[in-house]
Image (cartoon, rainbow, N blue to C red; front, side, top):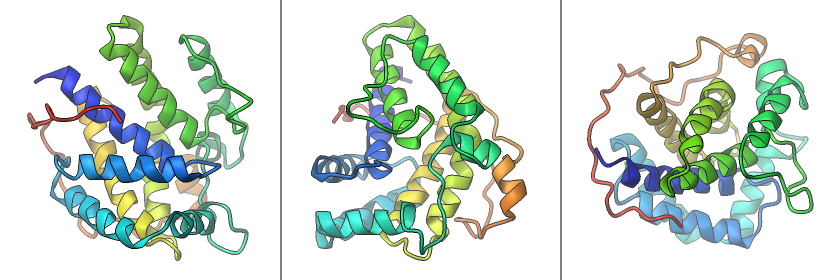
Length: 239
C-alpha cells in the first residue's frame, strides 16, 4: 500500500469537507468543492460514496454558487430550521467553547501552525478548522515531517471521531438537505475509512447523542466492518 498516494487522497477529502462546512462560504469554496468532487468520483472509497459523488456532480451542474450557499445557510445557520452544531465542543458538552476547543488549541500549539484570527474567526474546534488542520498535517507528513502523522491521528481520534457520525446523520436528515445529503454519505464513508486506516475505534456514543435522542440513520441497514483493502489512488493529487 502506497501511504503517500493515500495521503494525497485524504488531503483532497479533508479540503472538500473544509469547504463544505465553511463558516463564510464564498466562491473559492464553491470552486474547490467542484474540483474535489470531480477528482474523488473517479476513485471513490466504496460503492455508496461513489454513487453519492456522482449525484453531487449532477447537482453541482444545476446549482449556482448562490444556490449551494443558500442550502448551506438553511442547514447550518438558519434559526428557523433544525440545528446542526458545527463544533466538537457542542457534540461533547452541548455547548460551544468547551473542553474540545481547549484540546484543539493544544494540538495547534504542538504543530508548526497557528489559527489566523484575521481570516478565521471561528473557534479551533469548528469542523472547518479541524478539517483544514488535518489536511495541513497530512501534507506535512507527505513532506517528511515525522511529528505530523502522530498528531493527525490524535486529532482525528480525540476530536473528529466522536462527532463525525452524529454530524453526518444530522446533515443527512436535515429537512433542507439535498446536495448536502449526498455529502453526508461521503463524510460517513470517509470516517469509516479513516478509522480503518488509522486503527481508531468507533466511539460508543457521544454526549450529544445521549441528550438529543436517536436520529434516522443515513444507512437503512448497518453494514459489517470492512477490511481495509488496497485501492487505486495513484492518480490523486492535492487540489
